[in-house]
Length: 284
Ligand code: AMP
Image (cartoon, rainbow, N blue to C red):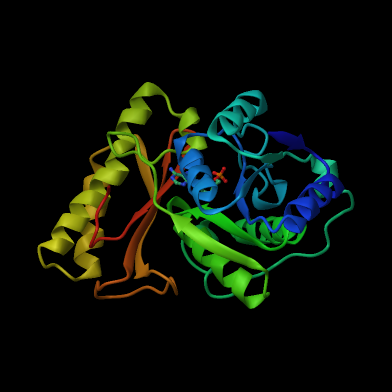
């Protein structure tokens, strides 16, 4: 596995790959890799000749007072995991390499960023879209893999890639979970054992809501009330939002139908956790 920290070296490496008519899979991450990331990597390896992983904790997507400085990092372990998984190129640029000048350009995506994470973290998606656009430009023609765990992010990046004609096909991959249902997340590292146990209420409430939908309930207000009640049984878990939306447009709906998505965010101790489900499928 090649480990590269400079953009011009990525260009050099990928020019050669393209000269050999090889396809490129891209997996952007902020590191502290877990099995959720590895699932994206494995999918990329299966579908492409060359897989490139990026590790960069992007300051643009953190607001003042968020966890940029404490965000968990372990580049040594990340390298080992990437190597073991069969990654060809690991790109881990410094802050100076990515943002050598003050950044005056930012990408705004309308509508998809108005609610949920966009409402709770108003500058977040502009920061995500800007760094992902930068990575898409650095890499060029490729297939890029993102997790459904960040459902709103996935819709936004898919739309941005289309709107700006990036030569990138965006693929969503299912959420990887612990056996008790908790979605894997680098931020789970913040949880104390007690909080870790309480946090399982998030996926449990989504699963119970899915069962209610599957037994015929279609009213979003009924389903949301059920989830709020379930989560209120855990005093360590403080719900930020619960929304039921049309899965692609992210518009709020009154009646659940095929393609609807239930999304929530909650604070558990120091950790801000998000999760979502297709209620016709449930937590898997
Ligand atoms: P992050 O490092 O948290 O920015 O995540 C990098 C990529 O991994 C994003 O596309 C996430 O959606 C994806 N991801 C994070 N956690 C999971 C998970 N539990 N299952 C699947 N994908 C995930």
